Image (spheres, rainbow, N blue to C red):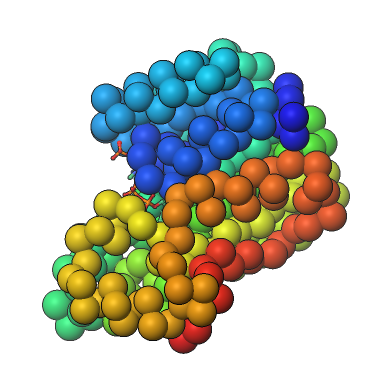
Length: 247
Ligand code: NAP
């Protein structure tokens, strides 16, 4: 299997895209640390699913926007699994609203989780990877970070920040055998998108040449590829997984 003997930490893995990534990496042979914010029941269900399939998983609750909590989380993973080979920075939130009505706290909350969280986790884990002179970092950005989207200044700023961050760490860490890439999902069916009105969903569908919304598994397959040996010579890239989405 692609990831036999590897350890992966997936943030925001209790549901949605992160859940699919955790299950996929475990199916490829990795021991998986499942991070989540507060949804213990859902996180336990992901762990149970991995174990039922013969894999190994660990629950690590932590707010990725809290530097001290991130340090503790990483220490727990290292204690249980001996290190971290693959870091997937997936945890993310939305607090949508037009710019003129955007509250400071909603802007800050999205930047704190979606961008600063990536900084905290990567800073701690990359130190371990540098010592080992190998590692894989995969960050979750979005089509919104590439193109922008009305009502999402906070989210677009954070996701565009993740792109700049990823390209920069790719340059800083390459000499230590560490690759860093980002995946930019388009419209993926999840709790985050289920709540959108039907006319908005139709407008999105009109922009997708492959004529279907993406699934969490579509994203997980790409992450597994970037985390595995077939992606050895790929770093600093932003891979769009969006059905060919235009505009
Ligand atoms: P989701 O279903 O809402 O799940 C979010 C996950 O992040 C949950 O596991 C949640 O944990 C965790 N989380 C939230 N805040 C956290 C924090 N402060 N610390 C640690 N964990 C935290 O989201 P999703 O739709 O799967 O999205 C996953 C990623 O893909 C996000 O980065 C999102 O921006 C990106 N993305 C999604 C889409 C889409 O169409 N869905 C498109 C492009 C990009 P709890 O369950 O404990 O709350």
